[in-house]
Amino acid sequence: MTAKDLKNALLQEAVQGKLVPQIASEGNARDLLEEIRKKKLSHGLDFPNGKSVKKKSKTETALAGSNPCDITEDEIPFEIPESWCWCRVGDIFQHNTGKAMNSSAKEINKSGAIRKFITTSNLYWNEFDFTNVKEMFFSDDELPRCTVTKGDILINEGGAYFGRTAIWNYGYDICFQNHIHRLRPYSQIERKFFYYIFYLYRNTNRMQSKGTAMPGLSSEVLHSTIIPLAPLAEQKRIVAAIEKFMPLIEEYGKKETELKAFNEQIGTLTKKAILQEAVQGKLVPQIAAEGNARDLLEEIKKEKAKVAGKASSTSFASKTRAKEFPPITDDEIPFDIPENWCWCRLGYICQLIDGEKVQNVNLPLLDAKYLRGKKQAEFLSVGKLAQINDLLILVDGENSGEVFINKEKGIMGSTFKKLIINKKLYLPYVLAFISMNKDLLRNSKKGAAIPHLNKDIFFGLLLPLPPLEEQKRIVAAIEKMLPLCEKLGE
Image: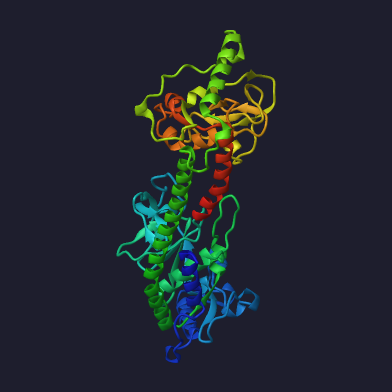
């Protein structure tokens, strides 16, 4: 069980009256509701059918509290003790939203002043962030409706964080915008009790929202939301019990986060250790019959010389010919490898090319987001062609060095080049080596405004080269072991 699940389970027990025992001498929540009703009457409001003693505006009529007897059995989400009762948010709270933000400094023919006000960006779970507090004009007649005083409960209306709730416990007043709901109790209650109800409802999808593109909590929905009401003394005991357990849950959450990070680290470190063993020739045994990597490298050398001799200055082969690299010195060699292996530079067996230009086509743009499956295809008629099974490597941006195996014919994105690996090598082995060094490649990129892959470092990387058949056995062993690393990280 996660810390979040544990907290929700605790709060569910609390709002069902199972966290503390009921005490008969503490009375009945219906008596408390009647006291609230009397307070509402003193404000000209009453429960039944949203009616009031005095004439109200249409908005006040729409938001007037409803009688608990209007709550049907089908609406009740869970059982509560006999001494409790069900009510709606609007039954016990005077509820409204603040003023819409505007750029005008002052409204014509109205007295008032420029005042600070809080927005949804200032409101978090039971806390406020005053890093960026805005100002605008509030007229004198807007202040009663748009001012927060100590003890008010505030709830975010819109966006991804709709329902986020906090209690204003400061000794000064402040104004608030229209995307915040202000709940002001008509009579004495334990505000933290209701804060925990709203937290539970929001985090168990019981707080309904309106809208699809931008979810939001409408006034009508919040006002009519059904909540359990406990006797006042029991509300206080429940809050005390909750807050006795909360430090333990928070500590549990910290340990959970640490354990998750540790597991992820173990998985990553184990994967790195497996790859390191692989490129040192320690993952699988060497077999003499498989030959020597020096012979393989010599074959590649002869092939390159043959291609270079036949190529003209305008041929594709000439364009893709690898440049010469300095010899490998003993000081460069990072670790020992088996006798039948050898070292070579990555640039000796790899090339980076732009590909052939094409026009008058209608092919998908092969950029990183599309290749990762995170966006729909964007079709182009002109660009550099990439064929199925081409290797595309990112050379610009934060993920420089990441390699994709292309799955369809398309136009190569401007941040890509084709990666050509000599066909005498086993492709997955070379790709595993490049992936192993992705942090080095990413941290060695060049460029100011847009970072680039450092091609000198890429081509100069020392590749520990086994014989071809051993390359295949190494990859088979890696593919068998890496899923176990993924499980370690779960």
